[in-house]
Length: 220
Image (cartoon, rainbow, N blue to C red; front, side, top):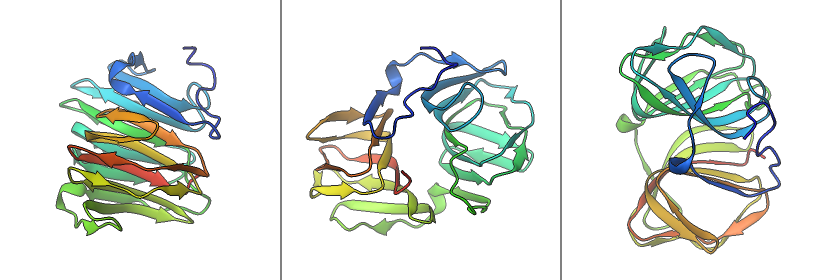
């Protein structure tokens, strides 16, 4: 893949990526590695990626002109504002500035430069100490993370042998599987899979063993 070119930016197209089978690519900062899932350009524009920091690695200070959204999957992520263990959800608004790093090493799910206009909230949440809510379907629990102008970001926890009725995503849907598995009429998806369903898409998902996922809807 040519990392200088646009990649998976046609959001009218469905995309499924098993990140466990992808090659890690070096970033401009030594010890920081990335797996791009969608990207507008090499080091600018809209990007969704997995980012891995080796221990004792720090990225140079930089701005986020259109915001940054982070979920810490593993390890300890850090910047001058604090330490963020696995399970932390972070939103840095447009124009924010920081010098991130990790003393222990960490794995992150990152979205850059995608904030809706006027979405300027700085937000941190340790999801291990948050209150889950029953979902609209039995066996599904949700943890809202952020909502703005139709966009909803949440965690979803499905118990084993849960089935969701057929439904449509008018504003699109993005899923990253943190643990477990689920399936629908289009395939089966394991831990580490990233799925982007285009606006207007429909499916009937289910799980046998249960799953934990990051989910974003209404943003396309």
